[in-house]
Amino acid sequence: MNPTTPTIGDGTRILHFLVDTIIIAILTYLLYGWWNFYVMYWNFTPIRYGPFFFATMWGYLFLFEFIFLRTPAKWMTGTKVVTENGERPNIFQIFLRTTIHCTIVSMFGMAWNGQPFHDTFSKTKLIAAAKQVL
Image 1 (cartoon, one colour):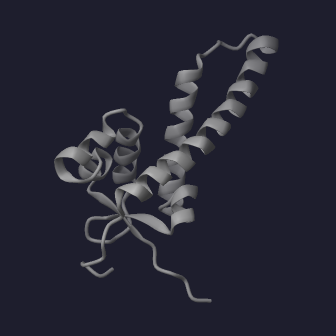
Image 2 (cartoon, rainbow, N blue to C red):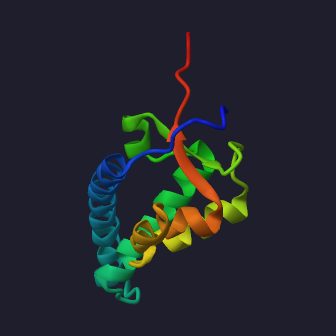
């Protein structure tokens, strides 16, 4: 990676948030309905919707970013997650990034250092993915 490669702007991050949140909400709704079937007919412990949403969000972000370095929204915009020096993040960095990303305070970092807290503390950044030539 070229060290002068620009990072991704706020508009792209907002689009990522909107697209990924819609996908996560639909996925959560389906999982919640599946869980409630077992609550009704097999006496599983009922769980509120909020914990389901955040657990689904955490799993979605962790799995996509760990395996592919991007979520479906990042595929749509042609971006990916890398370390500060352009390498693949390790599992601890992805774990930390995902955990902080699932908190409400993550975006407040934009006001102090120009990037979200989940990028700051995990020492990762979002860059344009290289185009693959077939």
